Image (cartoon, rainbow, N blue to C red; front, top):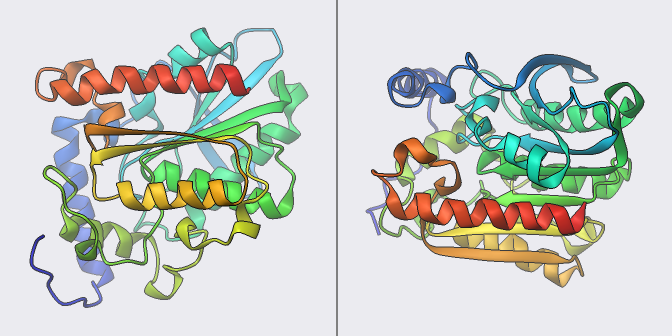
Length: 306
């Protein structure tokens, strides 16, 4: 356990400088974290109730009416693009018989809660309302999210639990942060986990301290009543991840509420393992090996659920 420094407010200017530095580094190591150019998905803007939202679409050239899978990428709320999941979306189109959408939501600290999650919910609502135009089956919609995207998916589940307008068939939560309230230094810190100092910055960039216990920010603080209408949900956690316990706590909440849950913990994996990709296979062989298993598990869950 790393020594816990005092909790002090991080000035917005300092957060912006730190995030800008991280994004510049990503240009050299992970282009898809900052850039959408070269994506195999179709670059599209959807005119939603939350404004125009950029998405990548896959399989929409197919004239058949099919189910739809809506994806939300990771990146700690502060980085990443829809192109991060570009290598994986065609797998779902091919192996699950769906049309797929990956959302390029607005990033913090450029915006703060609830802008990004409202955009993601609005995209889901737009797709539902424009099913005929998009040629998708509005009664067969699933959402999935990785890391921060998993947080958004849990929040969307909470929003729809109350509004009952999306009619989701299923949700996939891939190593989601579900507790933004608890100080990262007070969370488990297994070998190879996210640095608590960095997680503090991510959390501060995303929301104001007084918002951190809101269930739409930290879904683990939801009540059983607030999650009882969740559709079948898959929860994936990684053993070498400081977020594993909170992801599993949210899973336990769903189970207590009577939600049908499919759960798998990958003990040898680190946070973000499912998006390691083939080009990093030599550097992170175990994460890459386990990612192949996890993607197949997700495909199987979609096929039996949607």
